[in-house]
Length: 127
Image 1 (tube, helix red, strand yellow):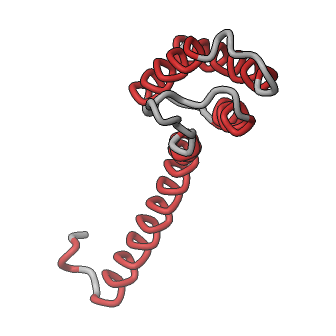
Image 2 (spheres, rainbow, N blue to C red):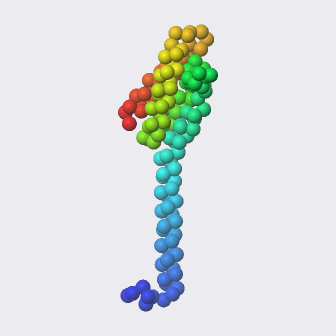
Image 3 (cartoon, rainbow, N blue to C red):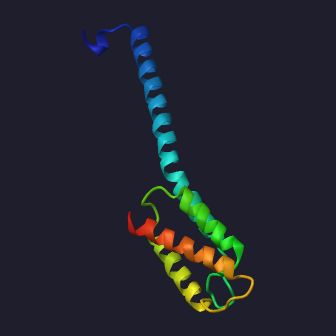
């Protein structure tokens, strides 16, 4: 039987079922994509909160830096924004080099940031 020969009510019913299937499928795809991409976008947004000193180097001897990096490490999943993480790694490397022998009360946070840097380096290089 041809489409044009079907009664109007049946054609409308078929089109409504088809529309429902499309809408449900698009919602499923949208939710799956959000789960896939949102974690990396959140990690990038968090990394943008890293504090910078007057010379433009990341402040590696404060607790927020190591905490932010550890949270980013936990929620990063995909290869999205690798160029961004390579820039962050370079900035961290420079900041760690500048404050390498500073010592003082921020030394414990320096060590935590250095460990987070090593973990981030491994994670980015493995992707």
